Length: 121
Image (tube, rainbow, N blue to C red):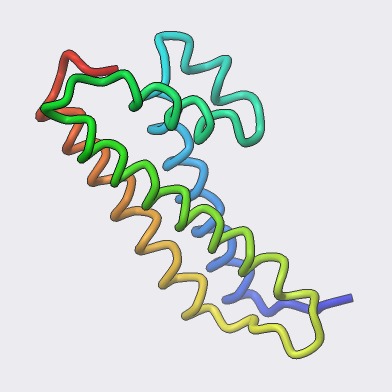
């Protein structure tokens, strides 16, 4: 069993909240029924990927780029959590805070893009 310090637990919590916020934005991109999509694990990313394929050409590439960036950051956050239980796994708060910052940048970029294209999603 891995014993985590208070600072590490707080950093993991911040990262988890940031990942969840990002998934909420992805669910909003995906459909009008965002709450139902958001409620299912993994569904926001899958639904957002599907939704952006049918967007107008004027914004499709940018959305695809940002959704795939979000996918990468979400995968990294999960990998960092799982790695803590491997022998020698990193548990320093700075690593989780760095991942949190990237998750939040993805969230903010998607919010900004949605603001630039209000008729999308």
